[in-house]
Length: 434
Image (cartoon, rainbow, N blue to C red; front, side):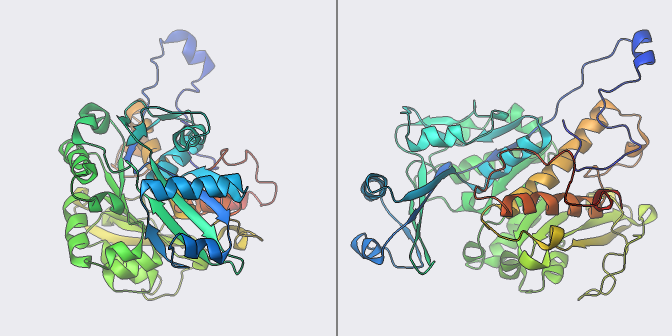
């Protein structure tokens, strides 16, 4: 497990670098590893530049998202491929992106539940999915299916308008039998997306997700939900509020999804409202940066040394140096908020907005898992005299999530190909040390 972020720490992390003199006197036990697990609709993102005539021929309304069947998907892919119109093919899926990025950042294991084509040919969608997923992601629990995984075509017109054609394939065919109870209950977190709750009749994805949630709750494993899209949430906000209250520990969303869920367009107010249902919230807000919100014990709160920020909640970041806790673990819980503006003002050229939120969530999950790792391997550390949900403070989680989101925005793929640089050549060290 790599240390989350880049900063000095008095809490001796990682735990396997022991004092060389003491190492001669004592038998060192092997560090106990930690991991996260997630459930996803396995799909491949296919990007191509097209003429409007092609959209009309396939019955795809320009600028909209349309479901197409397997035959249409096959014909469309064949035409795009044969005419060399495809610019990129990436492994996709919100949770797939998140667990991949987590494994890149932590340099450690994660587990993905989902489906995979039983027969894989070189160059096929399934082949590309596997090629673009970190070897640290454990894919041994995927359910084999007879058919293709999902495909999402992003068709870009000359005027820059994006039209989406989605072929579900067998991506929603996951059944509860393929959710391994022991794997879920020994993990540091279970990560799911709102899309899993809306599988079609006859598909097992929703049942599988609910079984995993049941296992996680029974073992007090945090359940992390990322909302995915505002259109899904605004259909029935009350249903989602109840679902989050009953099942979710950490909620990840952007400002649009937050408004659909809570009715507040201000991301700070939306995060505040969401704390009525979840213990912690990560809210990305585009050019405004991102927010974290959650609970701390009143007697353990730590005041910030940063400038107090104005907002819908005045001086909302006053206690951002506090560590997140479960509300149930607080005798006198207080709400804590933190914010950070885009890293270095954001990239000069934003190559991809897809996946920035997944990158930020991966950073938060890395910090959460690092807390479990450190607590398991150094139980006597002063860090764990008071139980926390994450290893770091709200402020540090903000900085780390923000830095990872920048890295995704500055590249074309929604998945990281490497961890953060060892040295920030373009940035003073104070970003991490302050």
